[in-house]
Length: 284
Image 1 (cartoon, rainbow, N blue to C red):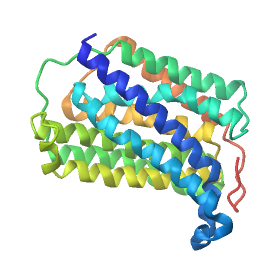
Image 2: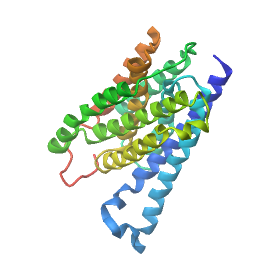
Image 3: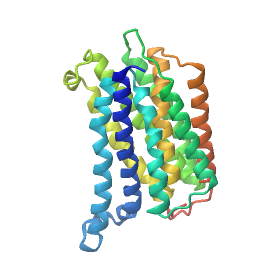
Image 4: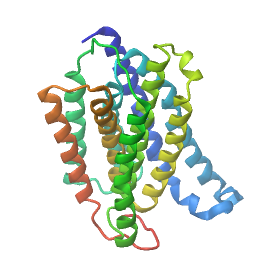
């Protein structure tokens, strides 16, 4: 493996630990958001500050992700590392959040982690320059997001799969944001500062903010051990799909099997979140 790419993967792995633990901290105090403006009151202030600290820890990963993107040759190399942070998340969920972490949760997370490692270690450097058409980005991103036009109402009406649906939607938005970060570098010919003169980093920021909102909604009705792995899986898979559709980048056979394994892990985790959710939005 190219040393530069390896360095990018190492930085991505560090940032994904911050991303996952930060989301775990948010989950710990997410209920404070249901208090409205009272979240700033004296009795709720500590809970709000803990939640805000979780947001800051998560946000700290953005700069590292951006730099890792420069060191690697395609966004899926960076996004695929997000699965590794699941190890930290599972430990946090079990021992800090005191969530149920049974055989299915462990099996689902393990499958995602192992297949993420396989996807990353079997990555190879692309040798041809990348190019894109903006209308293709809009079209394919719109198609991916439109899937949730059906899934979100279904979840809200039936009170099922809440954590999986909103976690997956958040992951899709993060994945699109990562892809936009790569496009910004392509547009700026790899200039890390020059990318700031393109619109894409700012659209990526909007996608990241929307992902934060969907994550909190997912946490209000779902367990962290379901929500976060779904976020990670869709963060991994979305750039891979967009790379194929827009850049024409294909993977090797092992990587395709790794993707199937990641999807299998999500299915395992979603089966742990099938309990009917109370309309008042209680934890699963």
